[in-house]
Image (tube, rainbow, N blue to C red):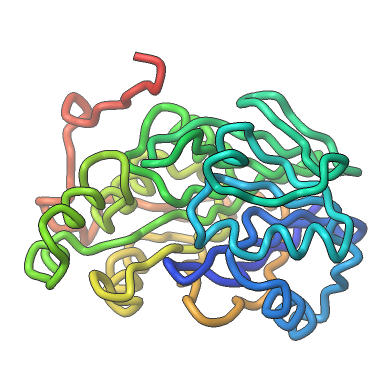
Amino acid sequence: MSLFISSLNSGSNGNCYYVGTQEEAVLIDGGISCRETERRLKRLELSIKKIKAIFVTHEHSDHVYGVSQLSKKYQLPVYITAGTLHDGRVKLKENLTMPFRAYEPVTIGNLTITGFPKFHDASDPHSFIVASPTVKVGIFTDIGLPCEHVIRHFEQCHAAFLEANYDEQMLDTGKYPLHLKNRIRDGHGHLSNKQALQLFLDHKPPFMTHLFLSHLSQNNNSPKLVKQLFTPIAGLTQIIIAPRYKETPLYHIRNSPPPHGKRMASYEGIPHFLRRSPESFEQLSLFQ
């Protein structure tokens, strides 16, 4: 069973991702207003009645801003950890508050949603895999570094929303104060272009058809730069830049194997400084 996906908004001004079948869908985060969510779904010709739940990655305002109003207006259950609910001060009706735990799948119609832990400077941050019986889509944003949980799930995805937040040189030479620069790159902040590219090169499955590069910094990155980095090594994977102020088109993700003999991602055309030897790539565990 195929999946339909779109980024409704991606960036520090709000994050919201749509994943669903023909019958039902979920939102991963609700970081834009209820009204903007409605407008963007309407432009995509998607009925909000298809949305059956919201899953929250963590408590930062660009991920929870519209959650309370969406839940209240449409009686949507919100899957959220106790720590995220407390620290995010998200106001939800008790009957619509659905706690979840890492690696405990939630079934909604033909969808299975599984959360897993990640590194980020939040109380109890999680990323998600949304799966139909034959297709898996991953949401990998707000990640300090690609730990083994992220790697393990990325390798399963037919499509993924992957953070490429900042260019290292732009961050170094930019106007942010030092404490903020360090927060972004200290392993509990965000993925750089280089880290995202390395994850893609080393762990992209041969059946991945779409990669949405997401949560780009407005001040420390550029869509053109990210596109130039990823496109030459994408192979048959379509590269989409998730914008900050509008939705992407709706993409149809199928379980379609690549044509025999076609080259997938490789190191051809990649600058030497982006290549890593296997022993230098640490797959850190959250449980160490």
